[in-house]
Image 1 (spheres, rainbow, N blue to C red):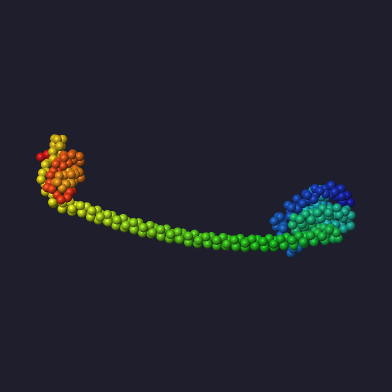
Image 2 (cartoon, rainbow, N blue to C red; image 1 turned 90 degrees about the vertical axis):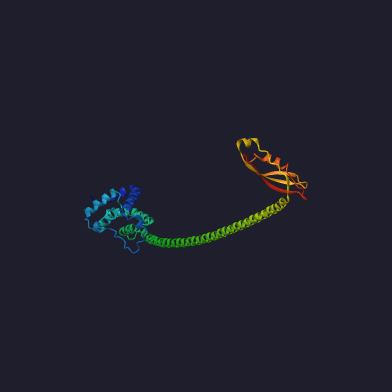
Length: 334
């Protein structure tokens, strides 16, 4: 196949593939290029890759023509590196510098390569952009877009580098802010812990003081109650002792005239029940019993009536004043 025919075929195929070729080559370029995560790293110090790989340069003219035709057919216009139509045509032009078909093919394919380079810059794949820039420069060192393309690569690399610096600074700033916030929160937690401990201690002291005060009051109340009880017992003893003494004195002055015995209740007599009744009597100045009441009876309510009936009939010698005394009346069936 002649170079003229190959160039004409390239001129016919290339315009038809203008849209799909860029997209297809871009996908192949993405597969062949380094991972996107590493592509964004600036490569200012890395030398640009050669426009044509050594393997392509080593191929002869026939192999290059066949490889270029196949690459065009498969839409490998500029990628992947080392296996694309642009590199094959550039190597073929080095071997056949006066072949118009090769020159024409390079002219037709150059715009696609330029578009791909700009896309690589937009994706921040600078190694790929430099490779494509090298291809463009080798194809046409005076290409109008070449200075702009190189400047765009350099500017974008600087922007990425600055962004990395800014990101690192921002990350450092955020980390410092995070550490400060952690320290602040730790201080707040420590202060809160100290405050809670002090409050707990104060509460414990207050509770202990309240407990001691309650014990003191309880002890004081017990003491006061004991004192009141003792005073009441003493007063009661005094009150009971005085009447008892007076009664005993008065009782000694009583001289009985007549003390008939009580009648034995028939029911108690039949049952053989015995007992006693303590009665309190008041003797008037004429010696008669003016009042009588049962103080204690054993058994209860068996001998009460007969005991009262008996003492009410008792007679004593006249007195200067009424006297109250107590007498025990016994009941025994024997």
